[in-house]
Image (cartoon, rainbow, N blue to C red; front, side, top):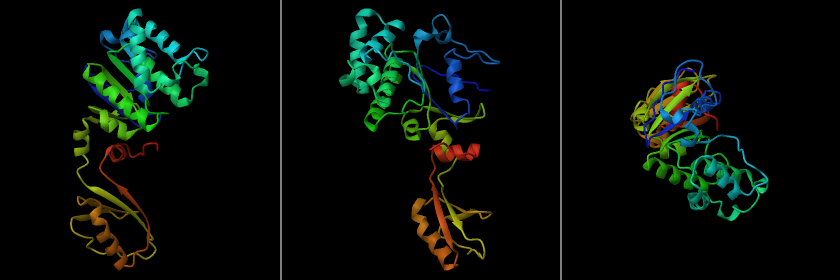
Length: 285
């Protein structure tokens, strides 16, 4: 793994990459669960002595005391992270409400659904108001209402000065929150910057990938205003800054040339298209 990462207070950094790219490994190194083969981790937040009480972590796997209630679990993790005893009840109660667990607070965790366990895990990561919050696929198992609530909670954490590093395949979630995005592939950063910086590298063109029968194909020369055929070696790839408004003209030109159309794929500028172009891979669905 060859990654240089510096995170400022209040900054939200998103890690974007395929499965096995190294996102979870990086989070576990920051958490001091794994030791890097080379390089250093600098900062008092990450010392073995005090780092854990200043960090919050929610991974892909839930880890709770299943025989205890949700609120008992939350109290335990709050105290373990150093929250003063007189502050615990108020902090836990507030977060239970925010993450949508108030009605299940007094139920044993063994009776929780997967989504409820995920909410409790996020609560436990947040309850001590960490200075550095590490999240691995935080929206997995969340319904749309809970996902929106998490978005609001993380914005508030950022505004209050918490640095957040999160890995996710949820592109809409990343687009709403991330100040900076690192595209990771095979343990290295292949592209990084703000959303505006990264998306500007794509230009504003919409791409149409049209699958055609190539048995007897003779392509026309003109496909409409501001439409360019950029690749005809396989599926036909068109680019246009007119968006999907250009599609009828492309279609008409192909049909008039008696080209047999087999399929269409539309690629709008966005994080998914950025990732595909810089890595040559598709993100997991």
